Length: 121
Length: 121
Image (tube, rainbow over all chains, first blue to last red; front, side, top):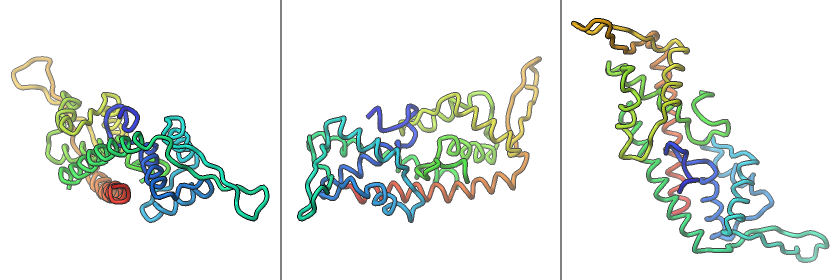
């Protein structure tokens, strides 16, 4: 859990939040390299969160370095030299464990924000 | 609002969160210099958040620098050389405006976390 929250245990880190979404996108077989940034930005646009390029790709590479995801390249049918890059699980058990940890962390953050709303308003 | 959230608009910053609590503590006339760190740590201990010394005092000094709070020193009755340091509003309108902005920001963060819980679990 060390890497999911700040040292003081304040709200969770953006990196962890993005990794969680990428794991779920992989479960749904919709994690593609191309347009990943735009997909995530579209997802959160209405809520005022615009993940930056660097955080998104660091999150993706963390998941690969941690042995959770692996990259798959597939040639597009009928098109020479073009390939689609997508992601599959390298270790689904580790992915599920990460999601489980993030559930606890999100619940904790929810409680912290709800407490602030209750204490101050 | 620029300083309350990260550049990408992810969750609000710890500094802003602490400033909000200090404004409310001042409204309740219970913001004392002594033991401020311990008071805040006690407040959040059950939720796993342990604000660090540096963040707490930077938040306090931000509020003073912004002209929202001012320091008051009062001599303790019957005790020579001892004084109590506490805080009062230098600009209560500005304090109320900050609280209003933070309400919007906390609501936004709540929505972001609730969305993550809904999307991933």
